[in-house]
Every structure is written in structure tokens, then in C-alpha cells.
Image 1 (cartoon, rainbow, N blue to C red):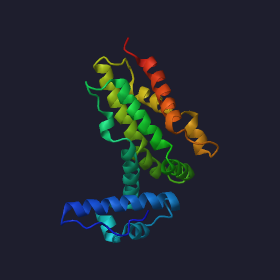
Image 2 (cartoon, rainbow, N blue to C red):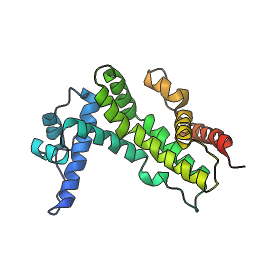
Image 3 (cartoon, rainbow, N blue to C red):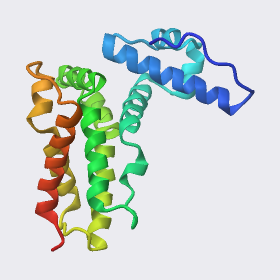
Length: 212
């Protein structure tokens, strides 16, 4: 939904953060509905209820704004705290939490539309594709890579190549469900079916890399 009116706030940083959030929400809305080329900074400013100068003061150009919008979407479902390994939480539970978050992220309407957009742009703008990958998928992949490296170092798992294992984990979660969703011939699982699907994928992964 457009954020035409910003909530009132005191002077300084709180108001700046509200404007930044409004700009990001407007960017996500317009990039998905109008595509990258069809979304001007003027239109994003109008959607956010701020001036174009304010948009540029927060994000130096449209490519930077696009990258931050992708990153923001990922962080909604997969905040950095999910990738922390703690003595209080079994690694299986940590991976379940990441799996559920990732499943919800990639199968959301916004993510499906964004992936379709990037596929349509793939042959036109490799720079934009690289921006998208680094802001979203690569960040998530490296977050899990570091977690798996720590799990191996402390003996909870046995993983010779954490980056490859992280890639395999996310491929298990995506499976055929996400592919069918992307090409428009299926629907994402929900509720208990989604929970069981993610749990099965995590169990397969743990059997492959268990410490014993």
C-alpha cells in the first residue's frame, strides 16, 4: 500500500528512518508492479510521500535503491539473528528456523514476482542481475555458510565445504515446489504441509552432515 502520509516524529534520526522505510516500501511496490525500467525515482518519491531530493539523500541512485529494497525483503524473513549458533539452541532447531524463514521468503508473492522480473531482465542487464544476487541470495547464502562453518568447528556437524553445503540446504528447501510456483503451474504449501515439507528437507540435510 502507498505510504502517502508519514507518521509524525521528533526531529532528527527517527524521522529519517521513517522516511527511509517509506521509500523502501514504495520502491518494492513499484519495482514489482512496473518493473525496474518502469519505476522512476520521481514515481517512487511520490509513492513514498517524500521529495525526490529526499530519495536521493537516502539512496544515491536507482540501482542502490533496488539493491536495498531486495536486501530489506530478505531481512524481513531472514534477519541476521537467525544465522547465530548458540549453545542453548540445537543446530537442528536453528536450521529449521532458517528453513521456515527461507521457505516463506522465496514463495511469497513479492519474491515470486521479483524473480520473474529478474529472469526477464537477465539478457538485458547483467549489472542489475549481479546487484540483485549480491543484495539478496548471496547474503543469505553466506550467512548460512558461516553458521555451518561454526557448527563444524564446534563438532555439531561434519562439513568439509560449508559454502557448498549451504547451497545444497537452500536447494532442498526450494525443491520442485518453488519451481512450479515460478512458472505458474502450482501453489505453495501452507500450514502443516509446509512445516512437514521443511522439516523433511532439514532432516535429509542433517543425515548427510551429522557429526556421528
